[in-house]
Length: 113
Length: 112
Image 1 (cartoon, chains in turn yellow, orange):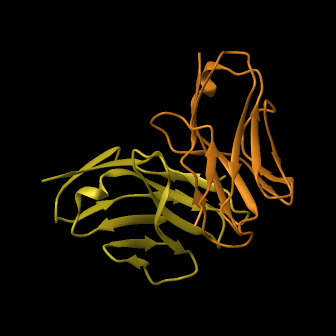
Image 2 (cartoon, chains in turn red, purple; image 1 turned 90 degrees about the horizontal axis):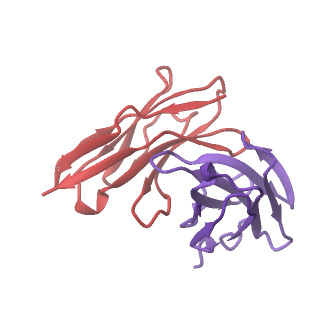
Image 3 (cartoon, rainbow over the protein chains, first blue to last red; image 1 turned 180 degrees about the vertical axis):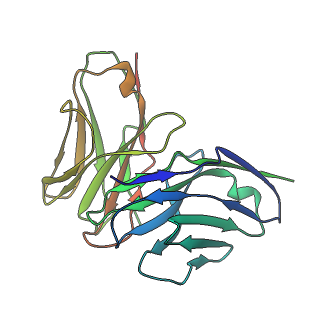
């Protein structure tokens, strides 16, 4: 079974600064996808960024980028130029071949002025 | 563009009762998955429906059952409610084989 570990329950960053959220996972599969989701108080899971395991190039979406280390089974999220609206719970998730998502326990990100 | 719609948004039930939660997938999506998110935790996979059949199931007891209708909407039923069933229940829809998922805002179930 796959597991996803987020070791940072809470993180804080100043507005306009950069923060990195950590995620490690365990799997025996070779083909999979990894995601970062944002969950604001509205409760809806919003996709931030995704990475295909077969791609060596790290995914980037505007201010969000990942550092995907397949051999180390590490998938960290970097948020640049942090904004107040980035404050939320962030979940790392693994997608298996059948589409099941396995989530980590989340990291609460606070953004301060 | 209508996303995933879940109803109701909040629900309070008594221990031992039964509950039905509903999900309408995003237009064009044919697969529906259900997740349980306890307070302070990440979502846990309950099951996935495609073509009106349960395709995959997580580690949940048989008290949790579901259904998918021909219009792809889905229901999650929980029988003999326990206090520990109190959680946010999220529905996610997707197109079979696609990578992306769209989540609803969830139903907050409180069992007293």
